Image 1 (cartoon, rainbow, N blue to C red):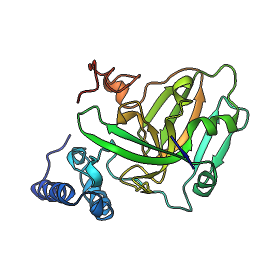
Image 2: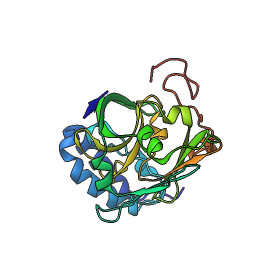
Image 3: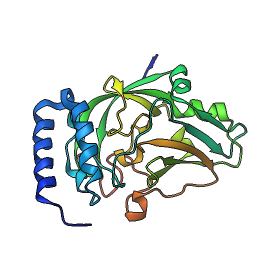
Length: 235
């Protein structure tokens, strides 16, 4: 491995507060239980207020969908398509069989929270692009997700960086559904909204297509400390 908008009910709010306290107190040890509880709460909370919930290990849970989507070991697929010579569809077992890269970086959310020294493991996005054979007219990569709502894009140059991976593990464990698993994008040098959860499609395109949050005013180039009104790495 290479190292490199509806009113929120009182019951829902009390559940959120309880889960938040548990997450702060016990962190990653409760991740499995929190993932299950988050799924239950978010399915009853289409307001998006579940974005306030702390997840395990210092993370916060965000979803633009009304619930956490699920894909199992058997039904997960990742499709690589667009301006490529060899379109392909990969199973989890295919991705695990590829060369794996491990990175330990700080996760920085544009809203201000941060998780220091977080290990991610997975396949370099550049490796998947090389397997597909990117055509000369391509300049960007678009990412789609099986929540049916989220999307993101990078320039081809950004996508080929060594610190951009298709992540299969986080903090030494398989990426859970609440964390965007079983497979998510991880763009280490950019704010975390660029690291699309529930990744299902990688499409090579002629130009950058603004993603979900860019339509609400977030920067397309989301370099930590140099975008979204910030001039340094402070939070």
